[in-house]
Length: 151
Image 1 (cartoon, rainbow, N blue to C red):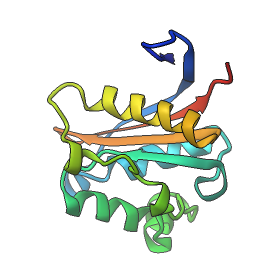
Image 2: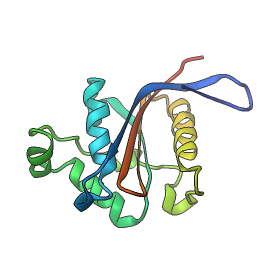
Image 3: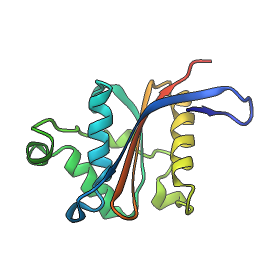
């Protein structure tokens, strides 16, 4: 996948690293945590040292907060991931252009908004990797790593 600028038609970022997950019902909105762990592990990336841009869908305030806590919880990691925490998200790099609560998430277009925002931020902030994550209706989760494309 290549994310292109409509103005210059140049590639901004690319990805072939994503993961989808159907969550247990009792953890309905923690898909971003489960999927982030998988996509980071698969690509040998560290959340705290390798990811410079975070775009995480906010279904509602409690959902994003519970994911941030779960990602950095050793107890959660011990129970779900064999002891390896996802890591602590640097909130100064999280949804800096406004998340779903601020700018909205039009039905069917949330993923496009997250990917476009992350790709533009990678270029503007001169970062290499972005983590995009979202939960969805029915207990689904998704995470994706975008890598800045140098034109």
